[in-house]
Image 1 (tube, rainbow, N blue to C red):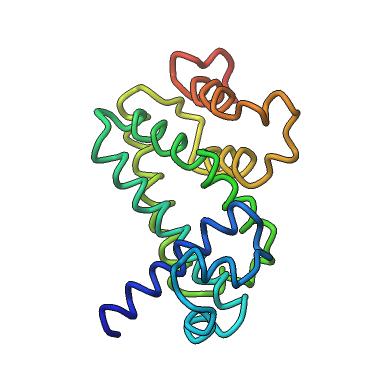
Image 2 (cartoon, rainbow, N blue to C red):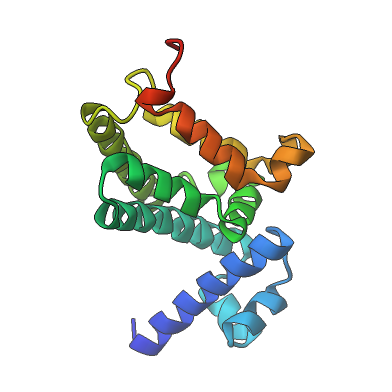
Length: 191
């Protein structure tokens, strides 16, 4: 693939992710093309239908999760700090809106893709490594696992409409409270 074609592809997927975060997965293709700075014909040559574009956005999303987790692990002083930074990043409003939009899709829209599955499994494995390190450091409760963090992210980023209004209005606060409850010094009763 030529360099300009790769750039167009990247711009289209990034624009689609941004527009879908704002308007949902049924956002007009013309709006996505305009945001990407390409013609509608270019968008349709790269993605013949919405399902193909949604699959690419799902791939982009899960790869960005992996990159953010790696960045947090590299920048933070300890494993629990990396977990906190990653969860905070994932729950930022634009990303959470995209997660909400993608969660509305049927699983087969993107989960059957090998690249998606590998990237998802990879970041989950690395998150598991951070959880194990945080527990070895004595910073994180031993009875908390990766699944707990994934469920927490799922509720706060994919299904904010199911949260009580005060919680939905300040998800960052409640995520921090939940994460504090996962710390060893926050444990009062075993799970």
